[in-house]
Amino acid sequence: MAARLPQTPLSVGVVRLVGATLIDGTGCPPLADSEVELVDGVIAYAGPRRAAVSSVSSVSSAPSIDLTGAFLMPGFVDAHVHLSMVPGDPETQRSRFAEEHVLETASVLRTTLLAGVTTARDLDGLTPGYRDAIARGSAIGPRLHLAISMLSPTGGHADPVRPNGSLPAWAVRPGMPTPGVVDTDDDVIRTVRELMRMGADAIKVSTSGGVGSPTDDPADAGLPVEHVRLVARLTAERGGRPVTAHALTDAAVRVAVLGGAASIEHGYDLSDETIELMLQHGTVLVPTLSTLLRTLDPATTSPAALADREARQRRGLDSVRRAVAAGVPVALGTDAGVHPHGRNLAELARLVEVGLDPLAAIRAGTLGGARLLGLEEHLGTVEAGKQGDLVVTAVDPLESIGELADSAAVRMVLQAGRVVKDLDGRVPAAL
Image (tube, rainbow, N blue to C red; front, top):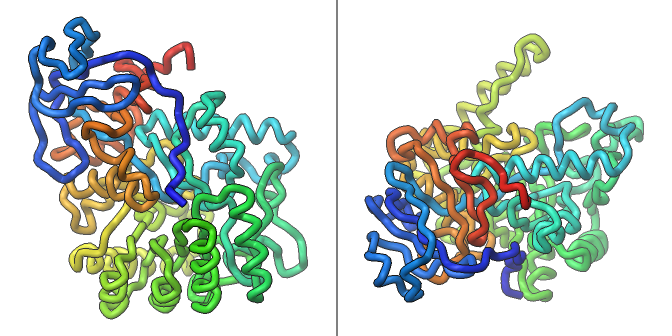
């Protein structure tokens, strides 16, 4: 099955963006005084600025937007988000009507898009209605690929049930998909087929425990390699969907890679041998460094928990640095929801911290994510024939990439050629 490209409504007509320094997402050096021409939402030309009369559209009167002094990049891809995790007290959220949660999630979707993320992969929590509404144009937000639910054993990272059998408030919010708790081959087969029937674009497995799970620990084992292989076989039988793995330990990453996972989420304890295994299998690392490095409140966190956190951060940074140095392919992912929504591009500076240069970090956040989602023919670079997903900033990302963490630094966003945030940072009234 070809990767799903939700059809965000296209803008109609011809427009030229001229004068910007173009960073096209391929890793090539920046191009000053560039031109990008869009025809019906698709890039028709990207390169040095031309005289208007030489336009491939033969429309010398096409409107132009002068971006002199600005920087133009592809729309970004965040390959690991949780957009249904809205800010607020869980008990308060539990008492709300379903419509309130839907509207809050819609606000998060909008915030994410205006931060420069034009495509996102939600890895647990969103149902396909959000994806389909955006594709129809009845809501605004990033194009979405969805895992819907993640899979783990009973008591594992996907299991929200507490020891006394109760559920935390976040697990019973209206509209939340059913947790993917699986213990047997039959459980795996049924759950994966149900997710594919519902329209999952990817299948997420947990091969380790997690930090926020009620009854497991990051060092705990998750799904065994036999179940990961079974998931990969089931997805292959239905035209192919990528399998991705939440994996915090070295053993969990090995299970995921040997089982056929296309990507590893987190990967904070990699041995050199496992890094080599990832290289052999072409496995992508989505390190979610923004979440790893987030600051905990000392007033509400025990000294032991703070010490454990600091140790995990040291191991995680060392792990990812060695993977980057070895050449493991990397895609940008933030774990937004745990990490604050709308600060997705903070991950770019984190990627530079672990060894990518700014051009490579931008490539990881654009083409790297598009490739992981199977959308590289349509998205990820500013090249002729691709969708007009573009981000404009006054910040020089090669000198001050950390400033892109503030969504106000993203001056303009286009999605399939449609302006969703104008040069004044405003959302057009039609949206």
